[in-house]
Amino acid sequence: MSNYSLGHGEVMMERFKQRAITDGSRFIEPVIPSKGVIVDIGCGNGALASWVANTSGRLGVFAVDQDLHQLTLVNPTQPNLSYIESNADALPFASNSVDLVYLHAVCMYLTPLSTVLEECYRILKTGGKIALRNGLSVVNNMGLFIDETAFDNLLNHSLKKNVDNPNVAFTIPSLLNELNFLEVSVNTSIESSKSHEEIQQVANSTIELLDGKIGQDALQYLKINSSELESLKLGITQWSRYDKAYNKAVWLEHIYIKGPQKTIVNL
Image (cartoon, rainbow, N blue to C red; front, side, top):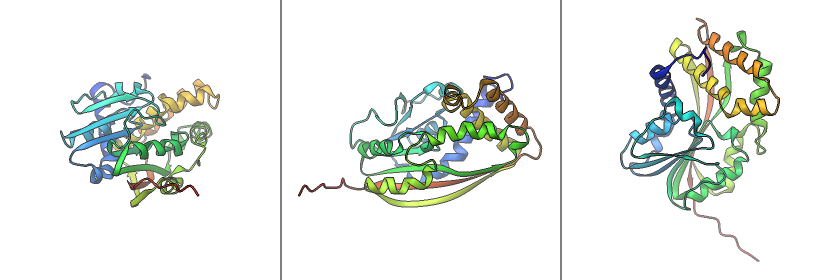
């Protein structure tokens, strides 16, 4: 962890947990079954999966990520929560075995997304649900403290790797309809962060992305160099301490249910 991190030890872990609860619980809570199997794809630091597992002891929650190193930030351990290191396009679950799959703020990084959603359809029971939450836009004054061009290069590289569509939030309905998922609800939500604690949580989450696969991937493909990356993290930290810092994010939230598999008629 960089020496200019926004928190340490228990304080940092609690902030990550609270950010996950704030961002994900309102969206995911209405579709959590009272019992059954739930899969969190792209679990990151595991905080949201931990919160979901806490809602009922009759749930079996499986948190999946291709790289589980972020778990060291929170590292929750619960009897009904398991962590699995796996790619999302080849999930290690039996067909028709899962009651709920959710993808929270990860679809833009899953390539190709169409294959991942096919896997979600395969492992879900008929009548099982899929919940997806993806960002549409972010407005803040972070640009006062960071090189926005370098930051955009880093994020756009990651987004454009998704061959389905860089703006996957608008692509999701057509992909799910093709697989015979049936729409339950689509909602747009707005999150405004202005308090010192909320801004710190936004900054922590952003630095987590830069320290993770997104930042490493951009370094590997020379979209940003190491000094630019460190400068971005330092600037984000400085922004979080600015008394006029603000952040507004717009999210698109989808809930779909798995319909019966389409019958293919050979003529």
